[in-house]
Amino acid sequence: MASATRSLPVEARGVTVRYGALAALDDVDLTFDGSAPLAVLGANGAGKSVLLRVLHGLVAPSEGGVTWSGASTRPRDQAMVFQRPVLLRRSALANVEYALAVHGVRGRERRERAAEALARVGLEKIASRPARVLSGGEQQRVALARAWATRPRVVYLDEPTASLDPSAAAEVERVMGEMRSAGTAIVFTTHHLGFARRAAAEVVFLDRGRVTERTAVPDFFARPRSPEAAAYLQGELP
Amino acid sequence: MHDIGASFVLAYHLATGGDPELWAIVELSLAVSVSSALLACTLGLPLGALVALQQFPGRRALIVAMNALFGLPSVVVGLVVYLMLSRAGPLGSFGILFTPPAIVIAQTVLVTPIVAALARQFVEDAWHEYREQLTSLGVSALRAVPTLLWDLRYSLLTVVLMGLGRATSEVGAVMIVGGNVSGVTRVMTTAIALETEKGDLPLALALGVILLALVVALNAAASVLRDWSLARHG
Image (cartoon, rainbow over all chains, first blue to last red):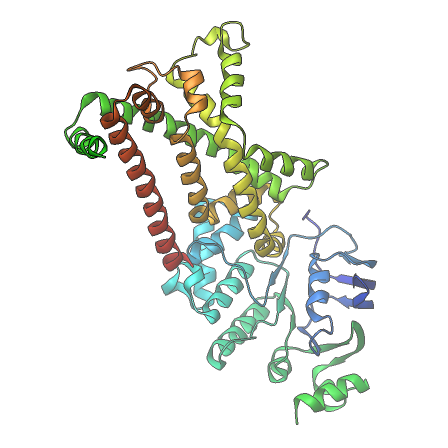
C-alpha cells in the first residue's frame, strides 16, 4: 500500500527476481538519488523492465530488498509510464483527472491541473476525445501527462519511445526534457541509443539480470567498461 | 394447422389492437423483471468484481459456488422464497406472498448469481490488463472495483441484459410465489402457461410473440450499443 514515504533516494540491495528457474534480476545493487537522469540499457530480456518495476515497487524481489528514503513502504510521490500504457475508457482529460482523484485532488483544482498537464504535453485540443482511440504517440503523451499531473518526485519510463514514429518520439523526448527541467527525476529504459545519449546523464547496463556497469553517458558511449556493454554497443552501432 | 394459423391471426389482432388485459400483463412483466434485474445488478456486479479482485480464504470455493448457482433450479428458488414469505415464514409478517414484490424477490434470487458469476469473469479478465497500471497509480483493489465496472460498462451491459432476459422468461418460481393471480401477479410467462393449458392459443401466442420481440429488441440494442462504444471508446 502506498504511503507518505518519500521516493528518493531509492536503493536496491542484493535484489534478485526469479520467475521459476529464470532469474530476471540477479543480485542487483543500485542507488538512485534523482540528481541526474538515468538510462537503463541492455539487450531484450536483460531485466530492464523488471528493474524499473522493482524500483517503482510493483514487483517484489525474491531476494534482497528495496527502500525508499530508507523505508520499505512504497511511496506515493512517484509514477511510472509503461511501454503500452493502459488508458481508461474515458476522455484524455478524464484519464488525467482519475490519477489526480486517486491522489486526493478534488473539484476545480483537479480539473485545472489535468488540463494544465495535457497542455504541457501538447494535447489540450484533444482533451475531450476518448483516450483509447488516440494514436500511439498521443496515448503515450496522455500517459506522460497522467504521470506528471500528480507531481511525482521521480518518474519511471519503460521504453517511452518504442513503436513511435520519429516525430512522436521527439515529442515524448521534449516532454521528458520539460519534466526534468521542472525538477522531476527520471529513470528510463530504451533501445534507442541516440535517445539515451541525449536524455540521460548516466547509464546502467544490464546483462542477463546483472548490472555490469554504471557509467556517465559520455564515457559509456566512448569507453564502455564491461565487455557486455561494448559488444552491445558494437551490435547497435555498426 | 388451420387452428394454429387462425390463432396467429387472432394473436396479431390482440397484440396490435391494444387489448387491455394483454397489455396489463406485459406492463407487469416488464415492471417486475426490470426491478429484479436492477436489484440483481446492484448486488451482483459489485459482488462479482470484489470476488475477482480480492484475495481471501475460501475464494476458490466461493467462485465454484457462484458458478454452480448459475444453474439454480427455479422451482427450488420459488419454494424457498415461498417458505420465507408464507405466514409461518420469517418474512411472513410483510404479507407480500402472491404480490409483485414476491416475484421481484424470487427473480432477484435467480438472477443475482448469474450477474455475479459473469461479472467476476469479465472483471478478472480485465484485471490482468489493468492491474499493473492501477497499482502504479496507487489504486487499491477495493477502489479498482468501481473503476473496472465503469470501464467495462458496455461489456457488462450484455450481462445486465442477460439477467433481464432470465428474469423475463422465468415461470416456475414466479408461479409459486406469485400465484398467477389475474390482474395482480399474472405475467407473460405464467399467462402463456395458463392460456396454453386452457387451450386459448391466441392470447398465449400474442404474449409469446411480444416476449420474443422484447428479447430480440434487447439483444439488438445491446449489440448496437457495444459496436458504437467500441468505435467511440476503443
